[in-house]
Length: 303
Ligand code: CP
Ligand code: NVA
Image (cartoon, rainbow, N blue to C red):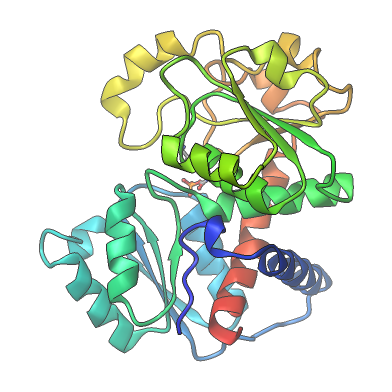
């Protein structure tokens, strides 16, 4: 049966660890300048309903480095669900290419697409989840801290798609995750319930100080995600006290890492001095998107 990577909850703990190890091997090969055309002759189709810098470039460059080929499909090109039904697009692409990455507005569209496709589908971000991001982030933490075991990761901001993937990761991996969000911006109930049933070490609070106290890493993301632009003004007010700044960082462990999936809005969710400061690992995170996604593509196509 074909495998997809729609959610971190699709993976076992062993599979997540396999992906980290494979990503580290592919990263080392690239750093040494060793060619690794493991996916020669394979083609990836990339569907984007929303803008992207990191996801597009890392998947496209990643496939090129693996010896394969990537095709970028903009919303104008294919009209997913408008020019043609979602299953028909999935069935067509399944006849021509080997692998599909899709960034959609609706998570349901993504799952409908993956069900109709007969080849592996990777979630490049939906309104519910962003699994490739969080796998890259966990790899970054392992590189900086040696292991995830015992780490306290504090997320300050919206209970959004990135948070949901963090919650799924907390079910599989041995860290503690504390979200500080404004009332009304908590994570999806069903996702939270999954973490409760699995006894994951997850806390949701409205108090930033509680979340970041003694944290090993402080993570934030934009207050207004793609597709929520009309809520921008309301959100700027609601999130005003949920900014990662020097005062917030004074409550963490002294060497806590600063993390952000990017793009960042300096002066909103994070101040420039913190984002661009010595504790920030945001560009390590973005680099690791390349390595983990290459690992995901190799794993999905070769097992
Ligand atoms: N972090 C991330 O997914 O960035 P893009 O939206 O630029 O792909
Ligand atoms: N939560 C953000 C992540 C961007 C990478 C969004 O969905 O816009």
